[in-house]
Image (tube, rainbow, N blue to C red; front, side, top):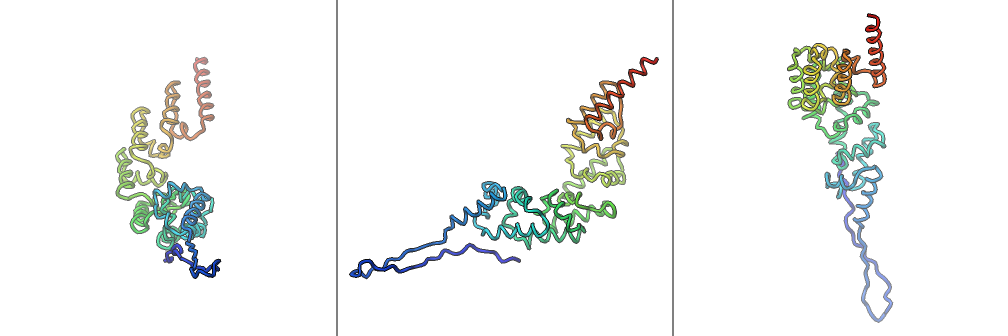
Length: 293
């Protein structure tokens, strides 16, 4: 454990000045004290240098007010030692001000040790994990991260599907409250447990989507409005990654308007420009077929 660094105690220094009036034996003293206000301003400047909102940091983590500046800097040094570029520190601290006053040895290094040894992330990929999912730094290893890792491995995240720098964000999810309910919902669409697992392994992002905010409305639109077959969702689980309002509905309505059909990959994987060009081609082809009759 790093010993807690304390602010220098208030000290009083007494100095004797020559008595301008030798007839009087009164001794004049001057008192100087450590300027705590100056030390506090130095911390504010330090936070501003990192592009951290001081007001937000102090509100969420009042301990910043009394913590020594060197203590705050030791956290930054810990992040830097693990390959996390200094330009990203401010964003991490601004998202989670509690990091500013944490003890690196008891809070941060256990997370890094878990990523390196339990998950088997390479050192050069640690930064990617943290940047993609800063919440890793404020998650408890024993109560949160390890149970999630063990659950994911039982699910099939091993071998070529092993948790990596792209999927470590799954580790901050609650097994009981988040991961299992999402698996249950996908199964409720008519898939077996084994089919659901295969879909998740092909597209792990499924486990990051909200049931009510993403999975349910998109599934209902596909099955009810698009009259789609759930088998197509099994073949293309990436469907849930596309915006319902910004892409799925717009493109589907254009196809319906012109009486055309496309598979989900054809409809969604291309850019807006390519989709428009394809739609024009289909209209011209349809027109040629009508003229040839």
